[in-house]
Length: 184
Image 1 (cartoon, rainbow, N blue to C red):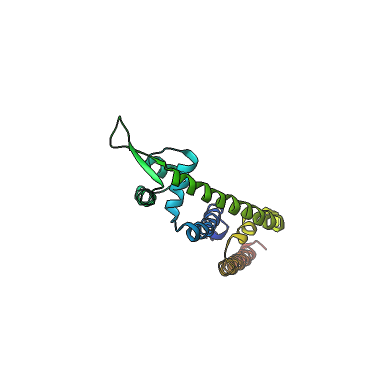
Image 2: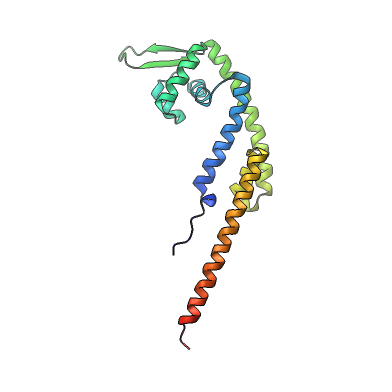
C-alpha cells in the first residue's frame, strides 16, 4: 500500500499557505488606511515600481487574471491615480501610468510596505532562529493570527500524530507478515 501523502509537509503547499497568510495580513494594513483591494494594491505597486505598463503587463507582473486587472485599473482611474494613453501604433493597446496623485499614493503605500517588511523580517528572524533546523513551519507561525495559528498548529500536530501512528501500524504489520513467512 502506498505511503499516505502528508500535504501539511509538502513544501510548495506550505509556502503557498505562508504567502497567502502574509498577503492577507498586509492587505488589512492598506485596506484600513487606503480602502484598497488586493488587485488594486498589486496594480498600483506594479505601476509604481515599473512605470508605464499595459494591463496585460500588469497581469503578468502581478500574476493576476485580466478581469481582476481591468477592475483594479478602473478603480485606480476612478480615484484619479492613473491615466491611460493609447498606443499610437496599435490603438487596441493602452499604456497606463500613475498620475501625480497616484505616485503620491504609491509612495505612501510603499512606506507602509517597507514598515510591514521590517516587522515581518524581525518576526521571521526570531521565529526561524528558534525553529527546529530552520523549517518553514516555525517561520510560518508568526504570520498567522492567534486563532488561525492555533488551528494550524493543532491540525499539523494531529496530522503528524496520525502519520506516525499509521507508520507504526504499517511497521508492525510488516514485521508480523515477515515473521509469518520467514523460514524456520
